[in-house]
Each structure stands twice: as C-alpha cells, then as structure tokens.
Image 1 (tube, rainbow, N blue to C red):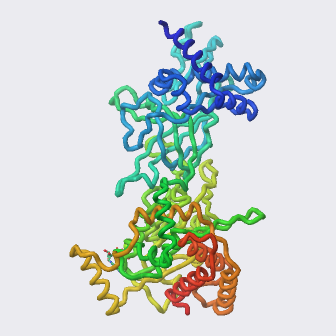
Image 2 (image 1 turned 60 degrees about the vertical axis):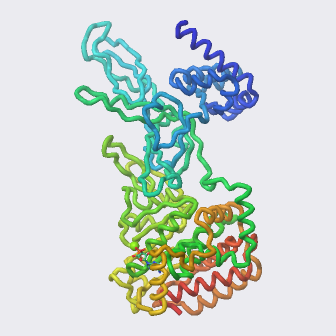
Image 3 (image 1 turned 45 degrees about the vertical axis):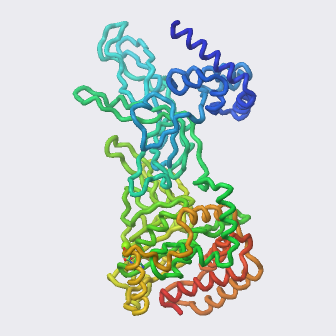
Length: 595
Ligand code: ADP
Ligand code: MG
C-alpha cells in the first residue's frame, strides 16, 4: 500500500475518533466558540478508540499528528466555515503518553516518539518567529520558489535558478514568507523529584504557535511532546553528535500544592496526631531533632513550614501569608544544618546559598546561553521555590542585583524584570528561611542587628522573625550539646529522638495542613494581638531602635498566630495561638537585643 492511501485511512480514523467520541466532539464546538486552534485530546481516549492508532501516535507522531491536524481543520470547516477561514492553522494536541519519562532517563530510544515529561520551567526565550515557508525570488529573472523549512535545521536558498540558470541569485522575500510563533523553554527536574545530592537535569522544549507564552519560568508543567534532534549541529567536519530537544505537543500547568498524594490512611493518622494535646510540642520536637536546643528557633521554623494565610483584600491588594525568618549566628552553631533539614522536609523547597549556583541568583535574570548565544529569562531560587520554601544559606554574600530584587520578592512575592527585550513578572510566593554569618566574624552584642549583618534595614524588615544565635560558652548548654552529639556518634538514641514524628510523615502533615486548613482569627486572638502591637508601638518608637515596629510587624503577628493554629489543624486561631505567637515575637526581640 502506498503512503498516500495509508495517510487517507489515517485521516478517516481520526475523523471517526472525533465524531464518535462525545467529549471530543463537544470540544470541537468549544474551540469554535472560543476561536481556539487546538483540539486537546486525552491519549487515553485514543487508546480506548483504537489501540493501533494509539500506537502510531506514540511511535510515529511526526507522521501522524500533521494528518490529525488536517482532520481538525476539515471538521471545523464543516461546522463553521467562517472560523476555519479566519484561522490559519489548527492542531490536534494529544495530552499524555504511555511513555512517561523522567528527565534523568531521556535516552536515544525515545527519539522520534511521543513522550510525557514533568518538570519546572527555568528559562524562556522571548517569542520569536519560525520561518516555516520561505519564499525565495531570483534577483535575475523574478522566478519564485516556496520552500518548507524544518525546525532546528539549516536554511539554504536554492543554489541555482531553474528558469534563468543564474547561480546564487535567490533572496528571501520576508513579507511573502510564512512564519509560526516560536519559543524555547528549558524544563528542569522539579526540586521535589531531585535525588538527594544530585544536580538537576534539564531539556530544551520548543513551543510553537498558540503554545507560545502559555508557560513562564517557575511554572511546573506536564508536557507531552516529540523527542527530536537539532540537526543544524551536523556540519561538515564535525562529529555526528547531536542534541535532543522536545517539540511540545501539549502543555498542562500543574498545581504546585499537590506535591504528593495523601492516602486515606495518612489522613487518619494525621487527624489522630492533631488531636493530641501536645501536638505542637511534638511537631517542634520533630524539627531537626539532631540539633540540640533552640526550641524557639525551631518553633519559628515550624511556623514557617505551616505558613499563614494569603489574603486578598476586597480592593485587590494581596498580603502574603508566607513567613520569612532570618538566622544570624556565629559560625558552628548548626545554622546550616537546620537549613538543610528544612530543605529536606518542606513539601517544596529550593536550597541555595547567597552566592547562588546559577546566573539567575536568588530572583531572576536575563542570561545568554554560552553555546547558542540566545537570550533567556532565567528563574532564580525564589521563583523556583514559588509556593514553597526558599532556603538561603549565607544570604549576606548575595549579589548587589539580588539585594534590590529581594525587596520586591519578599514583600510582593513577585520578581519583575526588564532587560534585553524581555519584560516579565514572575511569581515568587515563597517563604524565605535565610542564614547569615556576622559581618565581623562574630556577633557583637553592643552593635545593632543591621551593623552586625551587612544587609540594609529595609531588607531586614521583610523578615517576620530574626534570631541571633550566639556561641558563648554556657556550661550547662555546652555539656548538654556535647552529650547529645556524643550520643549520636555512639549509636545510642539520644533523648531528643524519642517520641518524634518521622520526617516523611511530618512532611505529609504539613502538606495536609497547608492544603486543607485556613484558620480565621477569633475575637480573643484579635484582642491579644492588638494590645501587644499597641504596646510595642508605644515602647519601640523613634530613631535608635534596631527594629522598627510598623504595620508590617502586625501582619507578621497575624501570620504567626495563624500558623500556630494550623499546626494543630484548627480552623480557628484562638487566644492560645496568639499568645504563642507573641511569646515567639518576644523571643525574637530579646534575641536581637530589644527588651
Ligand atoms: P553554621 O552553619 O552555623 O556555621 P553548621 O550547621 O555547619 O554551623 O554546624 C557545625 C556543626 O556543629 C554541625 O556538625 C552541627 O551538627 C554541630 N552543632 C552545632 N551546634 C549544635 C547543636 N546545638 N546540636 C547539635 N549539633 C550542633
Ligand atoms: Mg553555615
């Protein structure tokens, strides 16, 4: 059978699929109404319709999908010729593939096949234009030739004019050529999928036409696409090694909060634990039990993990629910160790240092790819940690550029950038847990916090809580820490590890609380917070005080109160929650030397 006939049969099959499946035919009507050009079809529906057609879609997508695209156009044409005429291209976009591949396992066997990957978008080029139908005109005789181009391949005008015989006489007629919008994004393994201690892998993805600008850096996506090769790399005198990329067929942006499934059994156990009268102590105890002491810091960290409520006021103004915490401390006081623990236990976390490992640093940057010279918008740690925790060690060592951008990121929870033709605002709704070493090597108690740490006061005020951890010899504490560490090294279970929650369970508990519990303030809680705030305003006013008490601190108190209530899965933040939040706040003031 010739290929022509086979393609005819193929189109008939697709037509039958679309018309016989009610869901898909409804979707056709839908795209006509909304003037969309993509018919989204679940792979599962193709499989249920015809196994061999589904196999072809997976094994030969480059051959099969263009035929399906034609069918979509035909069907739209029959139903509404006007829409069909107005819109140039239609697509049959398959959602999902039985080949669900982890970015780590993307190998030669998938070349040319339809696969599904999941990951986080880290980079994005501005939209460009793919010259897919080039019109060349002979400058000698005016003869015109139209040539279809392929992605990632070199473009060459015909060498010789077939009519007048002139050589190298063809030039591109840009206004009569045809283009498709094009954009390249880099998709990286999700932070939560990364094997411990491994660097994330990534892949280039080309998005065409109506898929352009449907995702942005920081988005977590599920992508169905065809693995293809960058053939432009195959040049004379070069080894035959090529890079693969994925041509996007369908993109879904995923909900960032659904990191992991919580089973019915998990839920039962979570609710059971939440009813324990000492549930908060239990949780605080379970935060880095290998670190001795620091109960207040651990309680603050627990609050950060549970978080407050994000509020959108009736006038559209949004107030963050994320709690930001800064630890300033002498070297060797287990700051880094605590940060590592949080990075491991938070449902979504990105661990980085102030210096950062990528060009994008903490916020975002426009970077130039070394190999291709292309400009990209690249997401930094806070954008990648959107809806999670950004853990930043040695924040005092960050770049000047990040210092400025961090102000916006920590209060408005967005990162704006405008550079090299790229203008964007990215989401950075992350709680920040940062650690810093003192500027003079040791924390000097007779200086203010701002002097001790090389950070501007405006940035410090973005932290809800700041703790100073000083390493002074204190006999009792030192002896307890020594005993604790020696126990850990002698195979004995220290006291601190008895009756604690296992890290993976604690993680589920936090996830559950963040997803389902949204406490509201009770009248009593409101009164306590208000009284405390007014008292502080009175006491710490005017210049000379290290920490300015403003309405921002009032919001911090509300967040902490809410987090305390979330910890016990309570829909109401009661007076006891407010009291704990106030206690924590006083501990912070005391630790930075205000009391
Ligand atoms: P920092 O980042 O504050 O300079 P690290 O987190 O690197 O310090 O800690 C140094 C070491 O000291 C770690 O191995 C840590 O386990 C140990 N350590 C310090 N304080 C404590 C403590 N209170 N309990 C247990 N271990 C501690
Ligand atoms: Mg450290």
